[in-house]
Length: 128
Image (cartoon, rainbow, N blue to C red; front, side):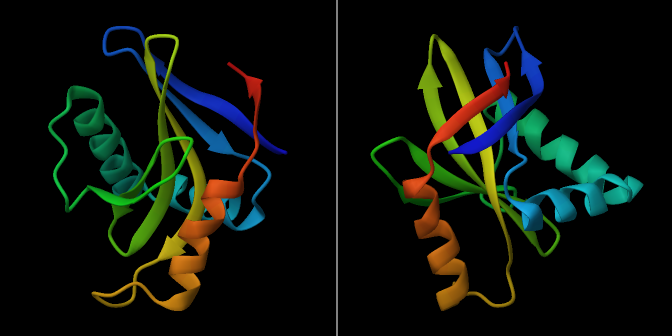
């Protein structure tokens, strides 16, 4: 069971964004990006584009499909935040689950196993 905190809700666009606090690598990288004004601004721009349905593949890329929903990568420079997108109660809920760093055009075995691990996550909402 992994714990997710609600970090953003948009009633207008019916979107909720959750961050996995159980994954130390993800928490560390999210905090690192949050401390860099340029990177956090890029992250916010991607989330705003996703909210409005205007994100493109350079920002928000489909990676895989699971029984729970689709997995996308939120791209901020070389950083990748792997996110499970599901629909629940009329909202699009985005669960930022894992962190990965893209180093080439193809996914490495490590990155592929990171993406595959998302399908086994059991979500526990700590704050909605």
